[in-house]
Image (cartoon, rainbow, N blue to C red; front, side, top):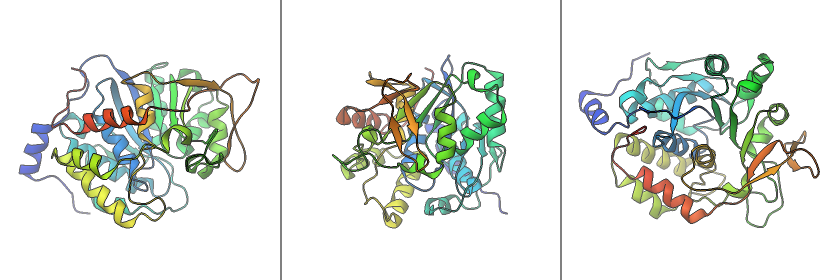
Amino acid sequence: MRRCRPGRLIAALCALLAPAMPAVAATPVIFDTDIGTDIDDAYALAALIHRPELEVLGITTVSSDAVARARLAAKLLTLAGGEWARVPVYAGLSTPTQYMKQVEWAAGFEAPNLHDGGGVEFMRREIERRPGEVTIIAVGELTNVAALLESSPGIAPKIRAIALMGGSVYRGYAPDSKPEPEWNIRSNAKAARTVFTSGVPLLVAPLDSTSDLKLTPGLRVKIFLNASPLNDALASLDQIWRHTNHWNGDQPTLFDVLPVELVAPHREYELVPLHLEVTEDGVTRPVENATPNARVAIRVDVAAFMDDFVRHLAVRSISPGS
């Protein structure tokens, strides 16, 4: 397999525009993603890179062909430049094949920080190394996180929190629709039940608050006009997604960005304490008069959220920790 490295010009440009890694105390996080299917995972990873309040310990991938997904994440980190190119990326557990055209963009890519397995063990190792400090941001199905909890019975009290995109509490994908099985939960309802009954503090971004987070063409232009290797990569992936996406139009919905924001908020969010129960068919049902197991973002100020997101990506350099 040919080794895929940026040329000298790209490397110099990456170094010039590179977002520095956090230099001061920040919240340590592991980002668990099914990047490569919907486009919002790539945007969520970019949002993570622009957050100096977060110390990214590593990326883990999940769902079909987790190795190809890891390759995509690693290439984005390399294009972010600087120390981001050294953030470890581990493939986690793979499940039955899904449609994921974006991974072809990173086909053949190799890098020292890319590992073709060991995602769950990486999670365990980092949490054991820093008990009570690490937050998992999970924006795909919960297969890796459930495997971690099941394989290490004493690990749950050592996890600071799990921030996840998943569920449908009072509405579904469409405005004024009824609750329905949401993709991440439905893809592995058994794993979701393991997570929701684990006792780990949960921050949940369901369809109620994420379905209206639309990245319009005008907002995309604001990001892509500020050229950088990372933003150029986002533009390429966005184009692939728009030409091959068959399920929700050509306007990205930033489902997976909200959990990043909940861990390091730029503004106050209304988080409602609820007890959420996951049914066998992947419905997240609120249970009245039960002890809350999650804090749930039921609604957000969409305009303010999108303004924050675009403003942070539409910059040429980022200095996390400064």
